[in-house]
Length: 288
Image 1 (cartoon, one colour):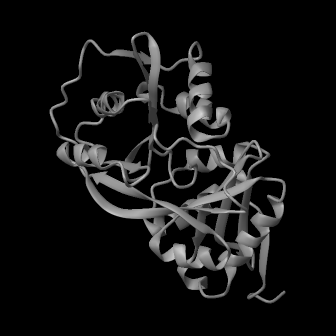
Image 2: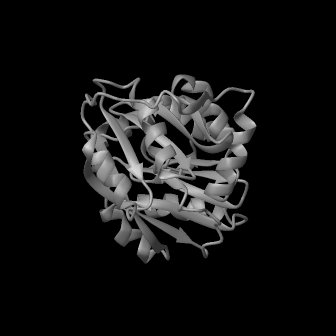
């Protein structure tokens, strides 16, 4: 067999160390736990491209109940770029996602041009913001009605998230809470659920999100609640959409800075019913 033949196959749990090498080479933030989440659901599509048995590229799609599939982890070894490998992976994903109503992704500026040629339509910008070492003296409103998310109230969060995100993400939310229970919080205003926040460790930054809330006051309180556990640590957030100017200005005031943006894009029409008024921080470009 020629050493140049590209083969596409399903990514396996045993491939995670090789997939992580692609992550490290691009200085992305994902961890082995993130790959495990993607691989754990049989409805997701996780692919590897190999040459002579070596994994040279990956691409994934997390499938939310066939309402929307989220493309992510499109990584190609620098030595093998320019051979159409990412296009081959993506076309294979699209074929396997024929029954899904909408396909979405968050594209980098370089990727946006490529995805437009494949038929994706730009929806809006989202901002990636970083705090290299959180040092702000956090002053939490002690009267705020916080609750740690547990098995006893997680169904409430799943329903709230479905109404905001536009598709069910129960399995993802349960895994994030199980992996990061200390930073999984909800808040109530006048005894009514007003919002929630989750978080997860990255290999470079702690990522806060998803965060959805009915009021910006709840959004800031939830953000600060998580930040109280992250003093001295590097933190990343992705704000959706970029037009949330007041929230972005507030993040800058507590030590964050804009590093780059993504463009949210869709394929096959946009049947998603997400409510971006209440959506503030995404889970990550690989999860939506």
